[in-house]
Length: 365
Image 1 (cartoon, one colour):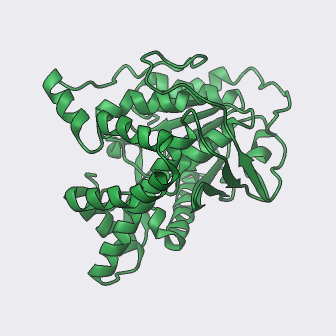
Image 2: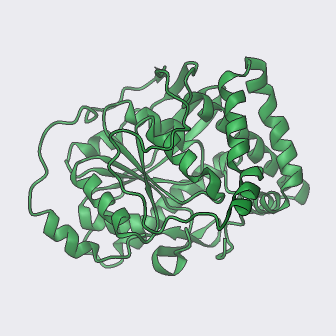
């Protein structure tokens, strides 16, 4: 993820001080909840990049080899055609359809897509502490069902006619406290809960939000997913080996903005930036790159999950800020282990919201 000489670059560009202008988001979030209603947005199908987004596409962006391969990929269950079809129901369907159809479609996919089903079962069996096979199978289906409900609500939330969402906020806002220091903040995310809900909510506070994410497994949905996020103000940086990716991350923090990075997917870079960390009693790969970035920039890493509590009801949960010292050898790995502990504890309490569909302890995932 950060495969260039970031330390030399950081030292060069940080000679100029960060401006001390007070952030509109640099004030503690009150307790209770926020009722979020959002303005109508155009459908995310325009081929152009969103206005105001200055982040260049990765020079290594991949495309399907040919027209036939692209058509096959688009027709897959996770392809572009099905994504657009799902959006129609999520945005324009009646309420009974939005509530009743996700568990049904989840069951169909659970039965038909054996690779993802087996991965979810294996992960749930480990997370639940070696429960009988039948319990792990049931838990895996609940993962599919919860994901389908979250996916439906995300499509609605990002669409042109969303209903009111309730988002419970943390009593103490570590993000606001970090931004008061003027060095930005790194949010460590994982495939736990529904990040897209909190991502848009953070943008609504007035601070720019940048999401560093892996490329979609199905390339036909790549641009669609990116445009959907960028049209509501969440800027996307792809986590590949491109120099532009690393420079954009540094620039984001120098401008005292929010940088969210997934740390639980290897992104094909296991040998370079992933680190084995104990997770549910065995070693699993997590991204160490964000913690090296924290060491160089002085920004803290704040683990975050957004848990689904009910219909259009979510709770943002923040872990304690993790500061990484330049002087202490191995401090990046120490912070990574603490972040992994936060996610393990959250998954133990909410296993049905761990949306990991590949065997997590398999290094080739």
